[in-house]
Image (cartoon, rainbow, N blue to C red; front, side, top):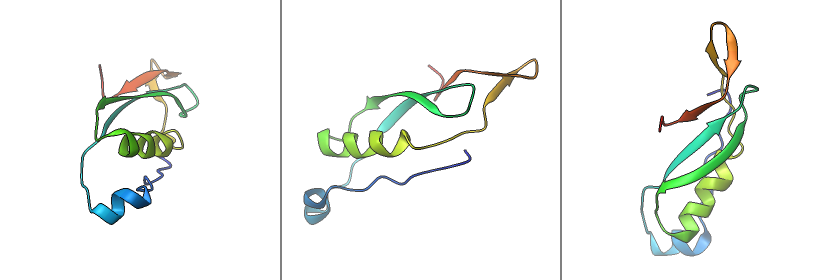
Length: 77
């Protein structure tokens, strides 16, 4: 990963000290940018939205096949 954005927890979630894990699958394009993201394990609507907003800003070193950049999914489906 070359750029990571931490999720911003919604204020009402912080106030309740709710903790949950959100798992997101991302499709990374040949430029290393997130082209698509989907929740595979939910932490609730507010936390899911915060996670998606954050991962859409992430950037990666592109995966390569035979030396050429390729689109890939993380984690692998």
